[in-house]
Structures are given as structure tokens and as C-alpha cells.
Image (cartoon, rainbow, N blue to C red; front, side):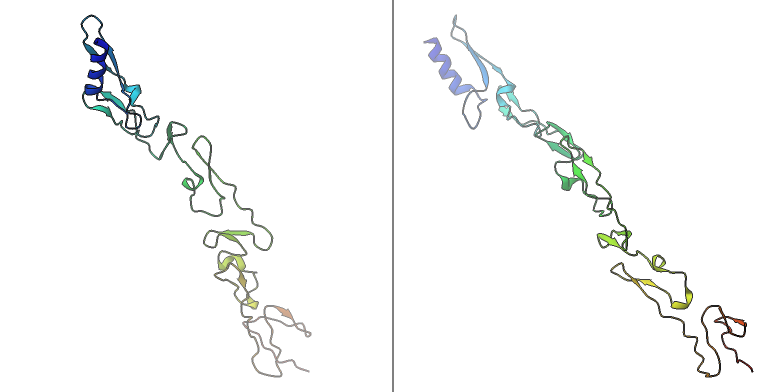
Amino acid sequence: MLVLNCKLWHILYNSCRTASSHQPTQDDVCNPADGTCSSTPNNANCDNNLFCDGTETCDSTLGCQSGTAPSCLNFCSEALDSCVDCLADSNCADENFCNGSETCSSSGTCQSGTAHSCSGETPLCSENLDMCVACLSNSDCDDGNACNGAETCNASGQCVAGTPTDCDDGVACTVSISNYFVLPFDEMVSCNSRTTSPTG
């Protein structure tokens, strides 16, 4: 009879029950001497086995109470039961192409990628285009020859030839030259003083 009374008390007054199993989550004891029941909150019976929502507790009056989630700087990992820097590779991406693709390790830390190796006709890496290119600025295209025009770098990262300097003065009997050149009559002239009238 005492056991039946305790079972009835347990059903009516034990407030720590799980929603899924409806099993009591307090440790209930029936005293055989007088038939009185006592109940001790057992936090373990309220545990939902999730780390990231905190530690659940059992209140003798209110039942299972939610825990306080850990304060993580970046992410909380259920798999590791800890705060981590990343959960997936996308969490590590720095949006830069040229330094390679960052990855998230099994321990939840970001790992640097391998920088792209650019060579040959496309020796430079462009963050704007996410590819290897021939040039990033006009200076990368300069061939050091002023007389063939100023080379430029286009929006696709390719060098574009300049317009050569036109030294023709329109006079048929003069020799027009670009840069320095030795004439047959051994007279040195330049593009700035580029015309001479051969005699003889």
C-alpha cells in the first residue's frame, strides 16, 4: 500500500519529466516506515545531450530548466563539445583568390590555403579577376622603348601595345628617324631634332 501511495505521489507531484518519454527525472524514494515520499532533483535526467545549448537542470518545483549556452567568439561545435573558429570551410574564406582556399580542420581551426602560382605569360595574380594575368597596371607592360608608344594594361589583365611615335615631317628630302640612329653620313640625330638635309 505504501508503494502504491508513493507511485501515486510520484505521478501527481513529480514535475521533472521529459517531453519525449514522460519518464520521471527526479529520484523519488518511498520511506517504508511511514509511507512518505521524498524527491531529489537529478540534473542528469534533464540532459538533452547537447553541448551548445548549455547544461539543463532539474528544479523540484518547476521541472527541467534550460541551460545557458556557452559564450563562443565564433562558433559552437556539438561534435567537439567546445567553442571553435569554424564549422565548415566557408567559415574560413577570406574572399581573397591569390592566397588560395582556406579550410576548416577537424579540430575547428582555420587553415591557410596554398597561394596560386602564376608564371609564364601570366606571371601576376589578380584579386579583381580571380586569375593569373599578364599585368596589373600599365607599368607592368612598359618595354622601355618610348618610340613604340606607351603600353597599357587593359581590364582583362592583358598588355596592349602603344602607338609608335610618328617622326615623318612630310619633307621628301629629309631623313626622319626615331630614337638615336647613325646616318650614312655619320651624323647623329634624335627624334627631338630629327630632320637633316643630306648634302652632296
